[in-house]
Amino acid sequence: MANLLVTLTLAYLLPSSLVRGVFDFQVSSPNWAELESSTGQKFTARNAHATTVFNGVLYLTGGKSDQYEMYKTLDSVKRGDVWKSYDGADWEMQTLEGDYYIQNADALQPGTLAPWWERFGHSLDAIDIDDDGVHDFMIQIGGFTPDPMRDIWLTDNGTTWAYCGEAPFSGRGWHSTVVFQGKLYVIGGSPFNNEVWRLESIEKTTRREPSTRASYLNYTYSVDWTFLGDAGFSPRAGASIVSQFYYNTTLNETMANSTERMVLIGGFGGWLEDHPFYDGFRSRGDVWASSDGSTWSQLTDGSDATALPPRAWSSAIVVHNRTYPGQDIVTAHLPPRILVFGGGYTGGNTKSTKVTTIMKTYADAYFSRDGVIWTRINYAQGGGTRGTIDTYVQFFSSQEWTGTTVDSATAYLGIWGHTTEFCNGTIVLGAGDKGGGGSLESRTWGGLAGLHCDLEGIICSNAGECAPEGGLYDGCVCSGGNYGEYCQYTADGTLVVNTPAIGL
Image (cartoon, one colour):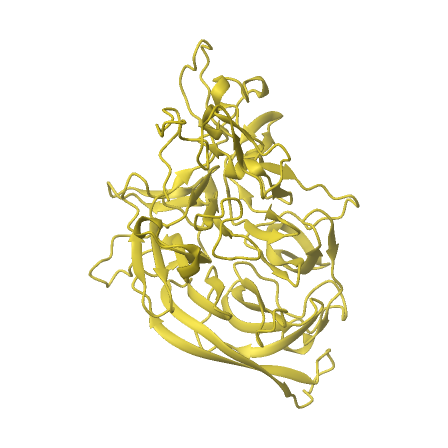
């Protein structure tokens, strides 16, 4: 994975005059609003970075950018910086201090280059270790420097970083992490593996003075881990993972008996070549769930018509009520939705021996409540004649973050290696690598109610209005006697014909 060469596809272009209105009923609701900085300061365009929300503040570390001059005699594409934002729009680059003696001993101390080596494909998570409702630390693990690393770094303020030694597992990048029932889980990664590790405790300890002139802290942290074994799914990297409170509506369960589970989605990889199930390396569409990290059940193998198209390096988030995690952010009587945005496909072809060496990037968004049935939110226009307009329309997506300019023309391109977090009352999607003729991104976007109103770009089944106030917590307001989350039923209970199937 660290040496994977990705050649992006050619751009798909669409004249701006054809963006909306090819079919009147496919004029979608606004899904996203670009979060523009009032100060003009923003992180450098990148992908493969890491983000987390630490006590209400959004942090971003590292990533892979275009080549830049790191030192006067050294160019790099790896980043070793830290940024924070209170709203996803205005960003502040942090001046850092801490244990420079272990890695970046020759950097300016304190300075904007971190004590840890520049990297990408790492993880960053906020931890409430004493379970008092307040995050105690951010923990950064591994990534490519370019070698796969297993170093652990902790900070309790975003600016002072303590080196906490090496994890008991092998070096890795593009691993998946999630905080589940108050504990951090590290799953898979590259070099390909399907290991599951759980962080058990963090204890502050004193440190002997190192023999160095570089900056150091007189304390460190002891981090204790438990190995839970190899998961049942194939080794992989770049998988998305979320924690979701779920209850099965088909069994008449309710929010009162919802249970928390981890849901792992897709990723790139496969069984290793000496394994009897080896079928090549490629982006995957299978989805797995676990309530303890040790036992994993497959929700879908990705082959069903309702499955999520295979992908890796996408971003996923659960939109639950911030007070009641077992309740959807908009619809109180249903389990919270899992949203997946973008990602990419590369690797072997399931129907032939052909290997795809380019990255096919996705410009879409899907949701699911159960991890089995996935429904596309966005409207995507493909090729061919459209209605009375005798024009070959190549591609358009109603997800606003897909829009860009290539060779002075409007283009709608997929993205991979981006991140999604919930901050300041909205979903913030940021950075990533655009497919086609696009480039690395530094833009950030805030989610709007259209994410909860549209199916295939159809607004509220053409039988209602999407969130008159436009807030993320709002959904469809039905008219004409229609009802349902998407106004998909008429007054007599008939499903509206132009509404795609909706999975619970």
